[in-house]
Length: 128
Image (cartoon, rainbow, N blue to C red; front, side, top):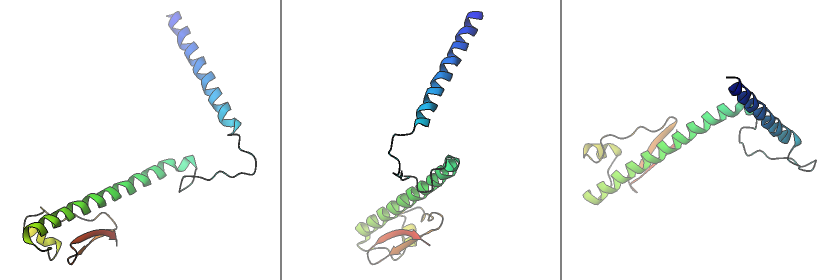
């Protein structure tokens, strides 16, 4: 039992030494000459306290962007199939549902709307 406690104590001491080394490297700076300003790549700021909020905001934007892309692609595929079969573009998106090319028109992501141009047969998802 004493031998195990000694090994645990030695491991803790080793970890403390490693942490102290890392802290001393961080405290030494990056060696940039004085007067040069580092530009942040973070759009919101570089405050570590904001990191969770920044991360969640980025996830929300990525989710909205992916939903927008997937919805636009699925609607455009249904329009292409309708055009190939019927020889014309649908009058509106509800015609795709009525003719069984889609089970339903997907809802636009929050803050967005679906815009359909029946002359060109193209769909865009744009901000409201």
